[in-house]
Image (cartoon, rainbow over all chains, first blue to last red):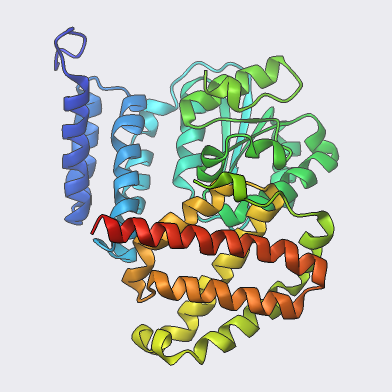
Length: 238
Length: 140
């Protein structure tokens, strides 16, 4: 073990070292080594939560920045993201082990939204928290989402929009869900970059709540289950 | 950030006419932009596709910002464009030029009241872009 519970252990330095190595492997197109690094790290006792929040999340942000500043190509960006999603799948034996709490989450991207890794992380966090999760992925039509709510009797619908131009589509989706019979019992939680930029935006799209990240999403979902009226940014940021 | 000058959320009527006219605005803007050889030439053979995609992106984001009245949404995209677009052959000056072009076309395509509401957003973006260009120049 690394002595991670020692007071002197430098978590920040440790995780930034892992993240840097992981990024380097991805940029070298070395998916096998990237995967080995993560699996070895988890085997040594690091939690999947920490891998998601302190390795995958900052590395994905850095990959986005590298593309934005033209230091990597679109193809490299897609390779890195696909590799991380594959490695997330390899972690599922560690994720799908939690005792169930009886709650159900449906997680999806709004129609037209192709950036799915964030909401996939959210679904995995809920799964680790004991929820049954139904991850629908990118660009899901409203009708399919409503059918799923009905089929699985979901408690919370998590909707992700990464691109600002999908905000209006998010509102249309939420309105459709709430107008449909199966949607009347579900509470809608939104997240994604535009909601982080303008923290009361969630109210404009008629959501019931908002959370800035996967960990806070679990807290807000818990509040929504216990409190039927809207719960948003102020709660999520506490 | 000059949030004080940011226009309030657009009315339902304006949003509706803007949404209906969006494709026509896009077509006219692409056609007019393609005539600006000094801006288009550096973009190469893919110029028209790039311009169309960029303009679609601009109009879609504008629609979201107008519906929500949130300056932060446009602010973020403009900062992003300063970083990214020069690598795609689009200079900040070109972006400013395009905002002016949109303003003209919106004046032609939308009823007067709606055009004034939408143009206020472009005025804000032009002013903001001038600020970003100035800031970039002062930091070298």
